[in-house]
Image (cartoon, rainbow, N blue to C red; front, top):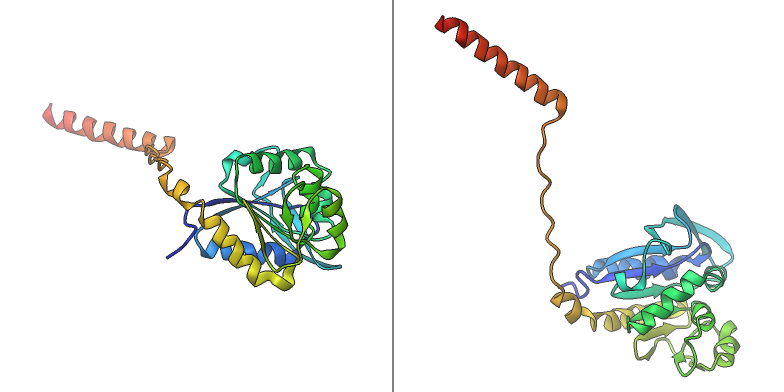
Amino acid sequence: MKKLKGLRVAVLAADGFEQVELTLPVKKLKREGADVTIVSLHPGKIRGMNHLYPGKSVDVDATLHEVKAADYDAVLIPGGLVNPDSLRQSALAQDFVRDADTLDLPMAIICHAPWLLVSAGLIEGRKVASWPGIRDDVKNAGGEWVDEPAVRDRNWVSSPGPHHMLAFLNGMVELFAEKMPEVEARPAVRVEAPRRRWPKLLAGSLATAALGVGARRLAALR
């Protein structure tokens, strides 16, 4: 049974995301039935990284200009060196995570991703695991830095990096699954089938044919 069927997850990422920190969680989410949207700063594609080496690109599904946190049930923020540094400089990205936290949306955060939460002013008083290189950033922002594979703090689960990926994935699914009663209680959106319309050319041909048959029948009666 899929644990996250119908859960709407926003994956907030930009160029320079750590490859496995996006691809593996997204794969896990889709296997569990979640609807995943890659949300970024610009349309098109974003390029991943394998630490310091270029990785593969992924398609962007929506930009921060087009969506809001309230459109989703959960948020995933991968790390990488460049990705969160770009996001933290975006007012739209900061607003998105602030709104997500205000709405109490579950958020899965890994590696350098807490940089965005630091800039958004959300770290103070929270327990967070991150890449050791940004430990001082977390502490200086008033957060409690924890060196554990997966750290749960209210609506957040965080992890130091891909070397703890299994713990992060399990923690993410467990946290996101707590949102499912709300998802299952949400009224289904009824999608009406479009009305079938004959193409103009075909409709014209049928009309002409009908007129032709009618004319022949009329002639036969005379």
